[in-house]
Amino acid sequence: MIETTVIAVQLALMAGVAVAIARSRNLFAVVVLSGAYSFLMATALAALDAADVAMTEAAVGAGVSTVLLLGALHLVGSLEAKPARSPAGPLIVVVLTGLLVVYGTFGLSAFSDPQAPIHRHVVPRYLEEGPKETGVPNVVTAVLASYRGYDTLGETTVVFTAGIGVIALLRRRKRPGKAEAP
Amino acid sequence: MRKDIVLRVVGKILIPFALVFALYVQFHGDFGPGGGFQAGVIIAAAIIFYGVIFGLAASRRAVPEALVESMVALGVLIYAGIGVAGLLLGGNYLDYFVLDHDPVHGQHRGIFWVEVGVAVTVSGVMLKVFYLFAGRGRDLEE
Image (cartoon, rainbow over all chains, first blue to last red; front, side, top):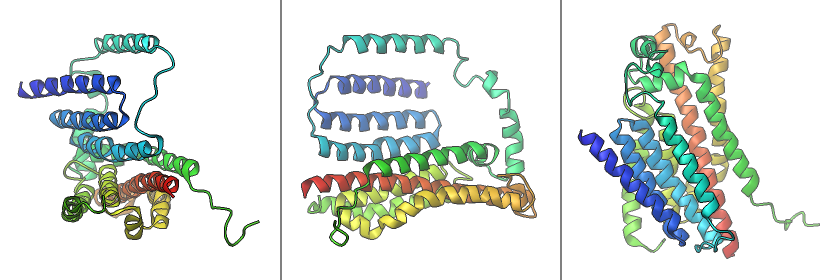
């Protein structure tokens, strides 16, 4: 009961922060607010007992990406330009998509319903055999690193590829050098 | 921010704890929440914190760019290498049971190295992106 209230309050605050982000013209405020948004998200995830995801959200969403966005602001200045067109069109698209997503959630089974299809496929086997087969009490780690090792290898490769892409885009080109200048 | 004494003092006290916490998250991930990704991100965040307070040059001295760039690739190599080690020892790719004569120990060993690989790549990528962004800003100032 308390958890539900806490999560509801956090979600309401997040909605408020999102509106403030959309309305603000000052990009510095937007970056700080999005950090606050990530922290609210992280605490909501912690209240949902998803400690691993909460840790990631707090470190990446609120920490590293805020610093990177501030670095970007340093390059582009912190005042948003006036939009060239009226925001009505995008707003309608966003509202319609949101309504569609909300409509979609009515088809989902109730939150943490043990009879939901997703909990009846391979989950019982992971929960019962996982600690015995892998000797790892944390089922999340067992699934992530062992049962779904290929997926995690793929994810690591995605992170690697993203890093290589950023390096390729932003690397400082060697100045037509002092030594081998043409 | 190099002249802000509060930040300097707090940073010097907090950063070692953040790094130790990252190691805890990394090596205790089998038993509690956490794992390679979280640990890698916390390591990167601690060093980025250091860079923000003491300047990019100082963090480049502490964690050289060449090391960061090789970490980006090294982590994936460790992960994929565990798969190849499984193949060489007679199992399937990413099969950990063959890594030790006791299958459960083999699983433990495989998961350990896989998580190390994830942490190395993730922290390398995060730090590299930070160095690139911060470095560009300095270019403009010059």
